[in-house]
Length: 134
Ligand code: MN
Image (cartoon, rainbow, N blue to C red; front, side, top):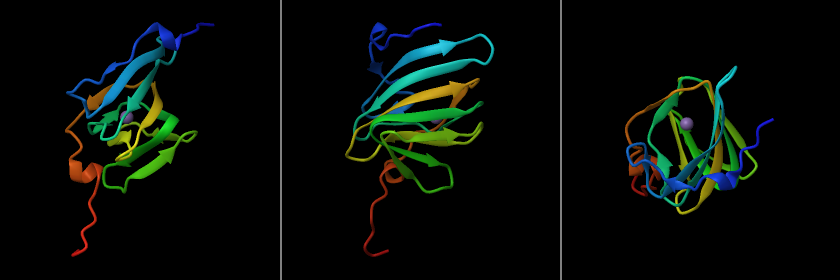
């Protein structure tokens, strides 16, 4: 058994080359033997989100606080709540972040995965505006 104390490492601002807006993250746990697994704790405040990216292995998100917005390229966005979980398949291009105007926190469990970071999520994709003329 190995215990990973959440208090052992501070949250740090998200890397601005891979995140946008107010994001704080820290590694929580990892295992290198057998199937590599990495667990991250990520806090998004309003406007905070990842860039578009994909993982070479599966990624699981476990929502621990607030509400998280997730979107796979070419699909509509979905909002998920505290207690919900999301799985992204290997190679699936996606982003995750806070819902607009709200806060969301998730654990991210990356299973045997390298992450390829892509372009930022445009504001109009993150928060589509209602067009009454449309
Ligand atoms: Mn991801």
